[in-house]
Image 1 (cartoon, rainbow, N blue to C red):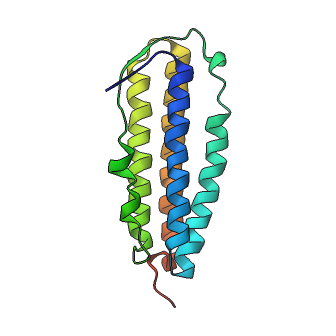
Image 2: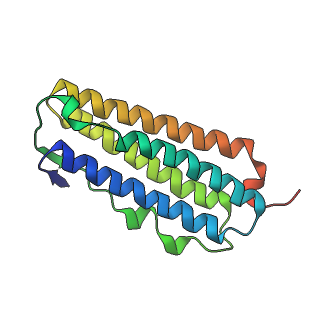
Image 3: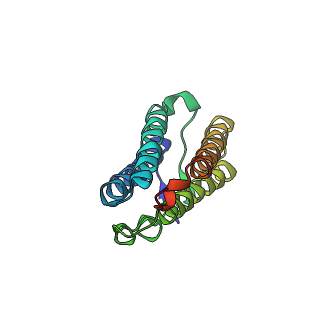
Length: 155
């Protein structure tokens, strides 16, 4: 469990975690050997960067009185996004599983914050961020369904 002194420090940590996903995409893209896999990773990375701009754009002052955030989950990125799990032989579906696991845990993190926070404005913020993550998970799964080459097989 983690304790954050204010909403600003919590959002800064969330952006740090999101940046780790950017690094993961970059490594996966650099190591992928199959063109179809590289293409899909690049698309997912681009979408992630657009989403990261939205998270970076959250103005915490717009969400009312600030408060301590107690009992927040601390996400262990090494457990979820281990760079040692990505090699040239790693299939795209394995990369996607790591990413979906990350996004799912992050969604659950935002949901838990929405449950813990007292102010209505901040509850709304974290409920919205959880929905935002849910949409990201859906987009990743949809992208995988639409790109059979992601497995690394040539046609």
